[in-house]
Figure 1 (tube, rainbow, N blue to C red):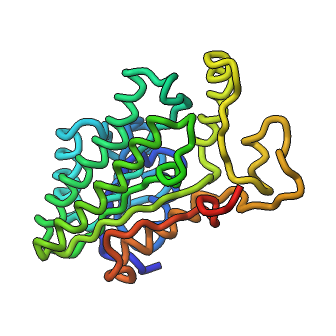
Figure 2: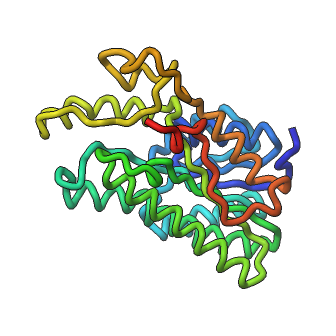
Figure 3: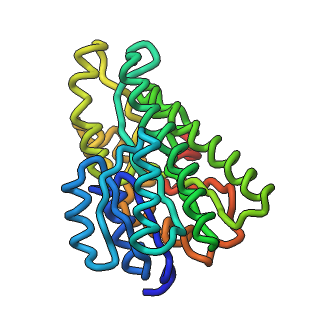
Length: 276
């Protein structure tokens, strides 16, 4: 109940799914949490579930002025800022040939520009607070293995990995006590996974063939294969839960991880390194 006590955290995309569970776990371990989302009503519902240690704020992660306002409002309310979790994301099913300019741009704006603004303004707020800080960025194993129907998503998550390394080194070079790390989840049971499944029919209609989702094989992943498990004899990593990543956020936000900086940590039960 005290792993992140006296810390103040901002979590983006926290109105549902992984962001919501991350807020719940941070609060459970003693943090004050700013629940942010473009859907302010959803963020408010999460904050009300947590109670007095949480507040909700509307945040369009593609707007640096929104990030500036959220960081300033957080410090005004809680007196400081220690942790920023860049979780907000969107997924699309489109290959390099099928993707559109608008689709690619929107995906990059949310998950590349949004992480940039979150780190930049988060660093400003943490420095102003004059306490050690931690910035945690969500990438994906898709940035490692290059799933073909997630072209824009893969590009954005690859950028997150690179930006994390650059920011971590910059802060270390400046002797600033702010760590920056990346989490690379695999298949987790979140609403984004349900969003993905709803796009399969449209992708198939556009291209004339179904997308190769490349989800890990094994119990718990049947939803990714509408026709049933593709290989009943092969037991793979299965599907994780939001808690599998949320508890890692708690660890990286806490002083337990004070010597972990610039790291990329997979949460995929070997999915990204498992032979086909």
